[in-house]
Image (cartoon, rainbow, N blue to C red):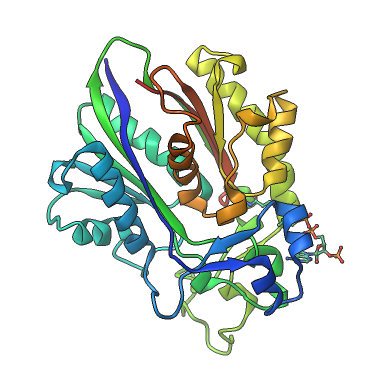
Length: 337
Ligand code: UT7
């Protein structure tokens, strides 16, 4: 049976770093609060000078992943682009990214899925590969949050956690009987919690997408989050979906060499590790450097875990897991070939 094997990874961060102390200059917050409540020390944000879209950040990450895989853009037969912050309303960022790569006919699929964009993207790539529809797939997660955040004290609970960034993986079909590649995925969504984390405007479900009489400073134009509800959901659902995916994979938690979770809040991932009785060094964190980069967060963590030698050797098994807006949540088990 065909297996989905990661052949290369890449990342790209806009160069400008915003520290917690920088945020203190524009809103009522503190380095101490942000570090203690989230584990974040800094994040990367685009500036007025290098303003660009998530597809542009994704393109740079994709180029790095393609080079690592030894592929030319023309080798790709499918592109999956995950973001909650598309460059423009439409067309989708996947088309823009393909254009940036010099392509003019490669199919490109946009998916939303927010923090679980990479999990849904990998599961989709795997389905395309296993069904024979594609052999070389590019999965990209990319976000430009900073241009849409409420940078006043009113938005501080959300704004301090989000960062801009992108990451990409090249996934290839391999004909092997070995139990390698993407071994299992478990995905979920519950739209009943859509209001817990959302940006409401502009809204196509209104007679006027940008309603008359509503100021552009209205909170509905910015992401709003019921943080405590999402936090509690994450602490409950992440271990649950982990058990589900391990069962599908026919593995137990002891066989996981490294957990690469979505980087939403370091406390969520520490609670997850404690619940599953994992040694601290088995859960990867890079939230301190980047904040929450949503669809980019898991592949960005994967890229750095490989770079740091924490995983990537043949036989190493990693667990990807995350929860975010939607709500969507999921997990997957991947074994390096
Ligand atoms: O990736 C998408 C999925 N998202 C998540 O997984 C996020 C999950 N939620 C969280 O990570 C946390 O809920 C937050 C980090 C967002 C907030 O932390 P919290 O411990 O849940 O804080 P809270 O919202 O309960 O607020 C506690 C206090 C409040 O003040 P009062 O009412 O107690 O006086 C907030 O106004 O902290 C205040 N606060 C802040 N203070 C300084 C909220 N944000 C800030 C801030 N700086 N940035």
